[in-house]
Amino acid sequence: MMARKTTLLWLVASLLAVLTGCSSSSSNSNGGSGSSSGSTHLAYVSLPSPNTITGFRINNSSGAFTPIVGSPFPAGNSPGAMLMDPSNQFLYVLNRTEDTVSLFKIDSNVGSLTEVLPRASTGFSPMAMTMTSAGDMLFVLNQLSGSISVYSIDSGSGALAEIKGSPFPTVANPVGFALTPSGKFLYVVNSNLAAVFTYTVASTGALQQAGAPIPVGAGAFAIAVDPNEKFVYVANTADDTVSILSINSTTGDLTEVNGSPFDTGTSPISIVVSSSGQYVYIANHGGASITGYSIDSATGFPTAITGSPFSASGAPELLVNDPGGNFMYVLGQSLTFVSEMSVDSSSGALASKSQSPDTSTVPVGMAVGK
Amino acid sequence: MIELALIRRAVLFFLFFLAPVLAAAQTGVAPRWEIFGGYSYLRLESKSFGFATDYTNMNGWNAAVTFNWRLKWSLTADISGHYGTQLSDLNYMMGPQYNWRRDKSKFFLHGLVGKGQNRVNITVGTQDHFESSGLAFAAGGGFDWDASPRFSLRVVQADYLNTDTFGKNQNDIRVSTGVIFHIGQIGHHPKL
Image 1 (cartoon, chains in turn yellow, orange):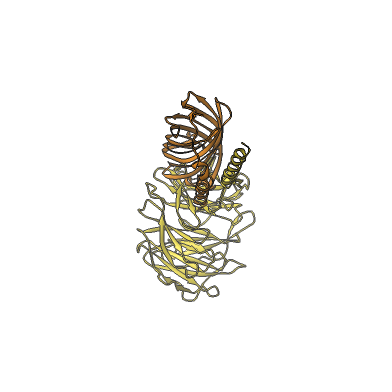
Image 2 (cartoon, chains in turn yellow, purple):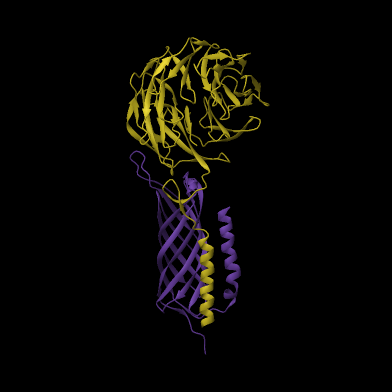
């Protein structure tokens, strides 16, 4: 009898020891009770046709896409450009035909979006957004009104408050802009004038044009600033070139580097710089390809990456960097998915990796979190 | 990888630690019906829903009705529900069960198949939850101890549970414990 009871207790204890190994639970910073390897990040795309936003969770190493439950989420009229704040708590979306910007709170565990109303007003036809590195200021480029709306961002709620003096005038029909990482200078590109306009940014967010416009190539359409704040890159759609300009860190003045502009594929339309500043990628809309350059950190002189131009699905329209540096995302003109390319950190070479689940309609904007 | 290691450990446990027990002769009587109810824990693979957490710990309940056709063979209908942060689930399955009966205890193994239903409790627009149902199957077993002719204690029941919801497979672990009520009797006591 005693031996039987002892055996029973021993067997139960062994079984519980096995099972205890599975129930390791730790409250994660998201507030849920579960275990997380911290191995994923969020991404959202805007779908103007059904006025929705679709969300995915992307695996940091494999790049695999998992749809967010509850997606697609309702948005304003014709959602376009999107931005996530550095804390990954808030998503901002421009509603192009409504002339507003929406604020969404991001559920950090599920990834679902909840819009915080009311929407903030912008100028006419808001087409691009940028944000300071600290996430305390948001800038919106209004194409039809030729102005820039500037908002302060409440760090707790993400709420936008338009600053005094906003919107600030810029040239008519601007097509793109970029803010330096320090937040000191803002560069606006104008396609009709084939020029880049420089603005200083005060601590309040107020903008002041600085110096004369800098000529670049015909059809200047897209602009990017390198993370080290040394160079500005401009894609010249009509010239099939990229202009590379060095930045005066004191005045913000731009000077074209020796040899600029440099060749791209047909109709360069979007441009991104790697997080290291070492590589620049230009989407060639007419060539279904992506031109990649390695940049000399001292002179800004580009050297074509081995294998460039890289083949891209369809007619690429928008390149989006993954903050982790492992991937790049490509939105194409008629593609109802996001193409994912892997980035070789040592060579800068791109390779087709994966694609998102079908989004039913063509996405036009994308925001990727950390 | 964690799941595979856990499953291997569970299988090894049953094979090596239970082997001597399983080899022993079984007793002659058993209830015709067993009604089980008790507490249940579920570790749900929530990353398959796009959650940031790979696994979500959930607490709930488990109930089952077992028809003992023979001393060794039974048919079980099992239902369980679990609740966690932004998640809840409901599974109902049935299948065969094999019993190793001793004088006042029983080890068992079962294989169950049925339907699983997972629910994500978030609000989007006017919708306050999102639900998906699909095939569910479970494989596992446990140990019961007879407290009296009418009641047993389910010391532990552990299952690997797989559900197919939201377009993905979930690999879950379920552990339950509780009380069993006996109805009727089958078999006979061995002759002295």
